Amino acid sequence: MFRNLLKTKYAPDYTLLTVIFMLLIVGIVMVYSSSYVWAEYKYADQFFYLKRQLLFCSAGVVAMFFIMSVPYGNWRKYSKILLLICFFLLLVVLIPGIGMKRGGAQSWIGVGAFSIQPSEFMKLGLIIYLAVFLSAQQKYITSFKKGFFPSMILVFAAFGLIMLQPDLGTGVVLVLTCMAMIYSAGARLLHFFGLGLIGVVGFVLLIASAPYRINRITAFLNPWQDPLGDGFQIIQSLYAIGPGGLMGLGLGESLQKYFYLPEPQNDFIFAILAEELGFLGGTFVIILFMILFWRGIKIALEAPDSYGRFLALGIVAMLTIQVMINISVVIGLIPVTGITLPFLSYGGSSLTLTLCSVGILLNISKYSKM
Image (cartoon, rainbow, N blue to C red; front, side):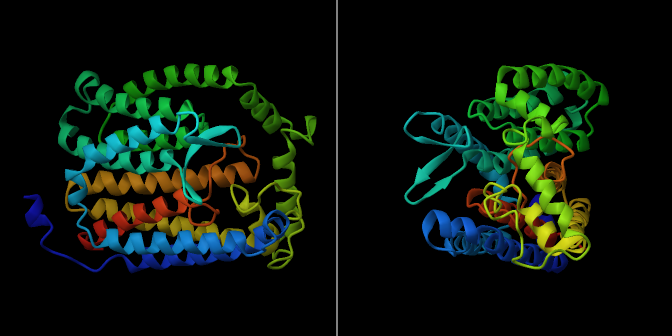
């Protein structure tokens, strides 16, 4: 039956494809604008981050178009292998001498002059496997023993390995994404309520076990308590957004990128965008993300089978959750988490895997009569 469904092909969702390229263009421009001061200081090359971002973007776009041409049903066959590879990489990154530490987290594996982040691979690998599992076991999802518990075991096994790095932000994105998929499959709210109680206790213990997480919470509640320490990033981010006003200071005219906001091309790139392009520029980017969310949900609803629906929903949920967390951090709504802004933030693994994910989403759209 699945093969018959995939005989009819439509064009990919060009609206979604257009939005993706618009976000990539904004990202490339803002990576250069926000990073050339740091790049000149650290590497004596103001184009250092731009050149690498163009390389990551080019590789990601090539991968996106290749994956867009691969029938999404093929990923079903390799879902177990992909998941095992992802778990293997999460174990390898914890080995001293192999895993690289950045910002206090041992989350990267060096590959020549570049590095990969296994947790980014795990997000996509788990989405693919969970889509297969839920499509096959959906009739049991209301059962705690047969449906809900087995699916959550995988999720928390991945979360546990990510927390050993530790990387709470990525772990939260992974858990919330998978919970959205499981809920859409028809899981009972009572099970989520019980899980939520356990999760709250576990979350409190995770925060209490690491002093830097407690400091992030207190800095979020009152950043001026430690303006040169844990509250520094939030304060400088708000200093960037505030002066931007309606129209912004002008492209390239940011003041906060002059060594006030640490590495502004990464997690806080939206703050620099708001400073230079103002409220209108920030709103434009948010509207693009809203269109991406709308087209992704439409693709999921129009998918020809439950596997395609869960797969599309998982990808859209992952991107949407990341966007919401990142922008919420930048404007001071939640504590700093270290989550990048999809398509815009500087980074190799994150950008490449994001483009691979939307490649799958675009392929599903070929079989959805939009």
